[in-house]
Image 1 (cartoon, rainbow, N blue to C red):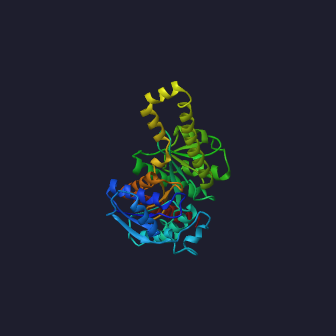
Image 2 (image 1 turned 135 degrees about the vertical axis):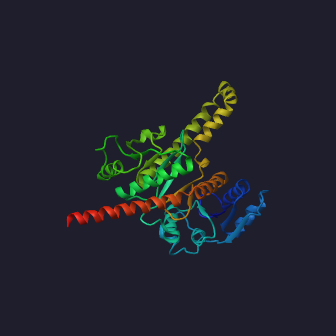
Image 3 (image 1 turned 120 degrees about the horizontal axis):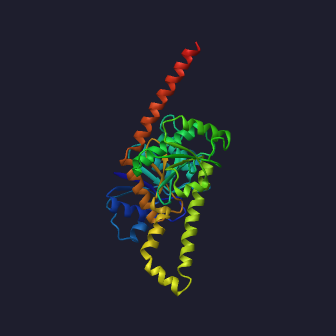
Length: 343
């Protein structure tokens, strides 16, 4: 298996991405194509003892910045590392693509270069670091959505959680400001009705306070709200870890307690560490595209590549396309029957 990795345009230096890719190649036995400035790549090689025999380099010194417009990846900067990596994936020269660059550009590039699954709106599915995995869809791709889009997100998220995390018939909750069916905007009420009539395991509306307790396996919302929830969750997780660190280093007694609880504290920290999940897939794209965190370090990059490998091996995209095709046929059949009745 070959994973294409864009090493440019993130918050951390390209060296972190090179190191993470080398770690992944060694640990998971995969081939890696690094797309970016060759000088940065060779410089990173010199600073590590990790083997480089499974690495291929595509020299592209230009990249998409966080300030660039989403469409720049297919227009003004079609010579960038992100564009080149997506093009390699579209041409079948890799099995998956990983990037921590500009989210809007990655979505636009994946949509126009790799292409979406027919009839679907692409969305970012992010695993929240909670007591058990909870998938948040959409976590940043789509600000304006329709009830049909949210139903698609729910279906894609259910397939993802079942295939990748082994959760049979995952529960789906619609993020709202109250549990009652009448709560929220017209969008929420119409989506509630649509999800209730579907074959999705919909448990109703859930509120923000329900998310940390994993009331639903999949939480569905628009990209703006989802991104706010994601950043709040990540920030609060870091806040909790910092508070514990402060608590257990405040005096001699607490420091002694920390020594006794070292294993427990490490497990707690790992549970709330977003880098453990590595990256978030762009659900609805016809080939695996993984969005790594903008501030990803080598460990997070390695785990994003692991996520890409799992995504390929579990056949999630094939199942999403199959179910989408079946729904399209059913919808057309219903519309045809309705036209016949009207006549």
